[in-house]
Image 1 (cartoon, rainbow, N blue to C red):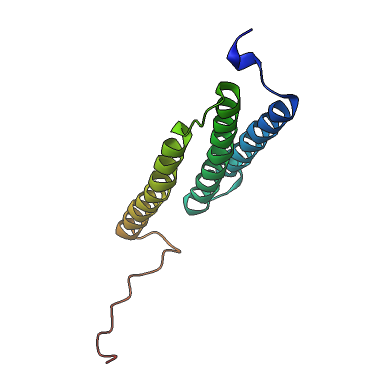
Image 2: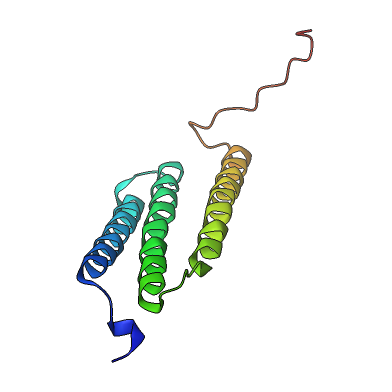
Length: 121
């Protein structure tokens, strides 16, 4: 019997719940790509879904291997840190480039750039 098959029942149930919850949240975020009508609405749903969904799946993975191997497995923390840092930056860059493109093309419904008033002192 290998070390990986010796997982207590409570841990297996908890890992299964975390994986299913993470997958469901990621799926809900992905459905936002189809459901929402504009690009600016579409970029929020998968961003939020992927961050929380990935966090739950990584938590399940860390829990599984920590219990099965009887030692802390924290590789998932590094993966989660990379996801948490890169996802909002990607969202911001995509939104800014789309906003720049829409302003350059003169599309309707895009707010104009307001000048900064530096005489408020």
